[in-house]
Picture 1 (cartoon, one colour):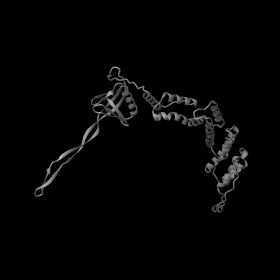
Picture 2 (cartoon, rainbow, N blue to C red; picture 1 turned 90 degrees about the horizontal axis):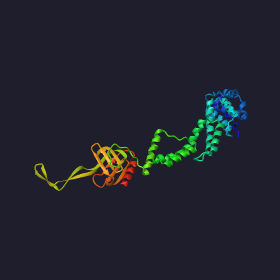
Picture 3 (cartoon, rainbow, N blue to C red; picture 1 turned 60 degrees about the vertical axis):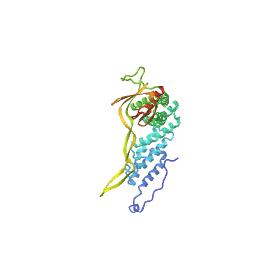
Picture 4 (cartoon, helix red, strand yellow; picture 1 turned 30 degrees about the vertical axis):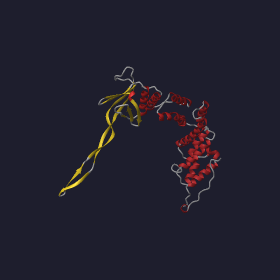
Length: 361
């Protein structure tokens, strides 16, 4: 298939005819016609031939028709890449053709990189199974990279981009569930190894993964054991500490209504009085009132609260059930006030530890 085709010149409009001007777009027509004549020997064309055509149409090649000139160059690049190899002679021709079009070397390198990157991606798709690239496939990719003059760092970037979706399929469920099992870790690192990746995470991600591993351990019955300076009973261990606000339900009067039979009687003049009986009615409602704030400890035997205004202890045997909310836990006791423990973050973890400790007691 021909790279360049002979084209008809555009007719001059009335204004151009009056001033005896040639349509500037005919510069591109004449230039392509020249390239069509020399398609198989573009290296024999001189910069002077192109400059003469530019002078004929009063065209400054450094300022106009940049997109069109780049498009001409891309056609020649495409032909060079047809066999997935740009040898020295072909590259020399590309440099010469860019000079003919008055294009900087940086333009040539950019367009060649874009085209060769597309060829590399296409090859990568053919050797990438979705989770694995064979040694033969890696060898083919490296051979292609060198043949099409693709920079090694650019090739690595394309490779990382292609395998990112595969690695995301391993990491996304972990971050969504906030649970990181040893099996998850093994699968992820094995996939990275198969893909030739060195898997490493920044400190903030490593911290999250450590927390998600602890979540997995909690779900599987391995509760964390914390050091404590507080006095515990024999055989009692501390599993969790949480800063909470302690709420209890209180009944409050919101208003007083008055009702009963009465009537009005005239005494004299405009003076009147009411007779009958009035019965006041209190309107009340139950509200949650913050009683205290402090640290709450989940030990192997009981719930201990150390507040600013006092301490409270709830043995697990006294807990009938509890409800988890987005902002805390409501504990229903078999007697006495049943508190709501308000805190932010890690409610599911707190609830799971509490549930296991209640079950063990």
